[in-house]
Length: 205
Image (cartoon, rainbow, N blue to C red; front, side, top):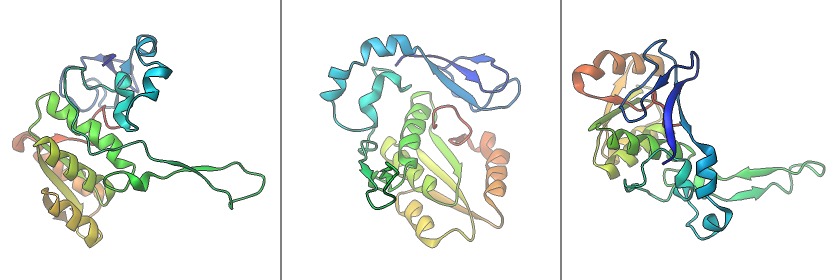
């Protein structure tokens, strides 16, 4: 909502935040979404937060999806912060229980924003290389957003993760190799197939 531009984490080059893109066009390094935090702070008040549903989208002002675009949410975020009373007497330790997210991991947060921004900026097909929870999150949010999901996984990925992605409607390709090999296969085919790589993009983290 208050995002002004994308900025390369390495060389600092600015990019247009209204374009669907992955990495810096100059040095191929990650891009960060830069928001006008002063303006966001004036709009996002403590009183306003208290009246909102406890989810990721209660912080809408500092998320990149424009105000006129409706988020597709499964209730991600708003997970409890639990005090670990038995960990140690002299350590005040709190643990964020991200297993209560819709796809049972913190990956639901980033993938929710990544998928919605990809759709908003024109993507119809998304892809990812994964061997675990990110695949389930992508499959879930792509399905809700009406996007076609292509997930590449090492052949020795846990059967539960493969089944989760498949049952959520994603198209699964098993690769004899590592996640890096899966990523290489996406890179080789994405332009021809019309896929947007949801890992190498600025809105997931």
